[in-house]
Amino acid sequence: MTKTFTIRPLSYTNFTNREFESLMVDTGQLLEVFAKAHKDEPMYSKHLDSFRSKLADFQAQLAIV
Image (cartoon, rainbow, N blue to C red; front, side):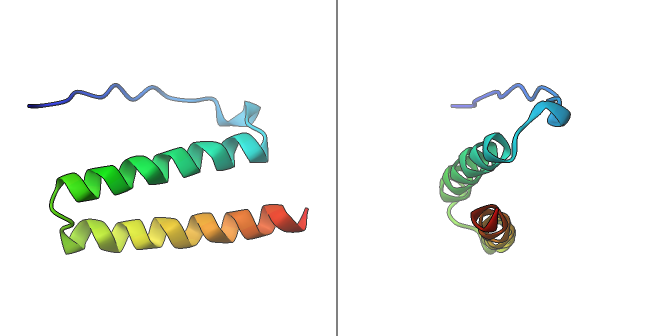
C-alpha cells in the first residue's frame, strides 16, 4: 500500500518558539515511524539521530527563556 503525503509551505514568521517546537516534535515522530517502516535502515537512523540532537538543543534553549 502506498501513502501519498501533501507538503504545504508554512509561514514560519508567524510561529512562536513553542509552536515551532511542537511542529518539530511531531515531525520527529513522523520520521521515527518512517524509519521503522523502512526496516530501520542505518541511513535513516543517522539522520534521525541528528534531528533528535538538534531538537534537544532547541528545547534546551527554550527552557532557558
